[in-house]
Amino acid sequence: MTQKIYTRTGDKGKTSLIGGTKVPKSHIRIESYGTIDELNSFIGLLSDQVAALPIKTLPDSHFGNSLTMTVSDLLKEIQDRLFTIGASLACDPGKDARMKIPDLKEEDIGLLERMIDFMSEELPPMKSFILPGGHVALSTAHIARCVCRRAERLCVGMQESDLYIEPLVIKYLNRLSDYLFVLARWLGFLMHIPEIPWKPRT
Image (tube, rainbow, N blue to C red; front, side, top):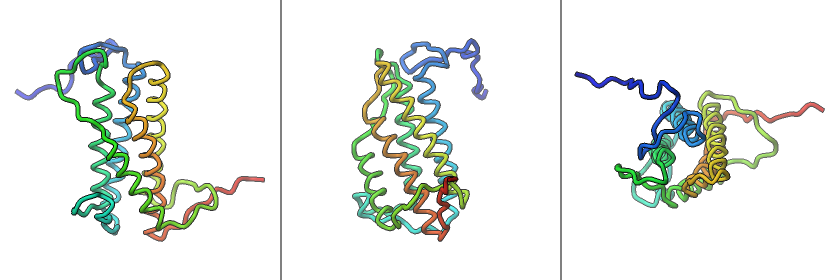
């Protein structure tokens, strides 16, 4: 017999954290990891779109190993880190979880920073604010960036409400939003898509 996807346990507007504590589905902790899930879905969409583009592989030196990676490969690595963040946010910090939750590491942030630096070196300097658009992959990267910023704001809200959150989570999300912004510019640069400058009305 196949396992049913629905459990009916959340029909009264509550859900359980890892550890068993029940909280309202409107709780900021639930909103935080739900937004991480939304971000992960957009990263998956972006990865699928980028996989169809003629984009070069990324340099080995930026990964600290002998493997070559495509942008889609790196985005899948980011998706894995987002699952780690989601699991961390879903834990009740006051209880011991029975399952082992993977850790986020400083090296994960370092990888994003190295890729930001690599792409930035190839890009022309920005002379104005730019509007999202020009190609569906660029626009998707910007949507992911915006969702990432929202996730970061929610996590900061948790911190300000004295709810425990691993400090590396906020740091990673901050750097990831920067990465997604630079990635959108870099993809456009590689595809020779002109940036759309914002020209405010005067």
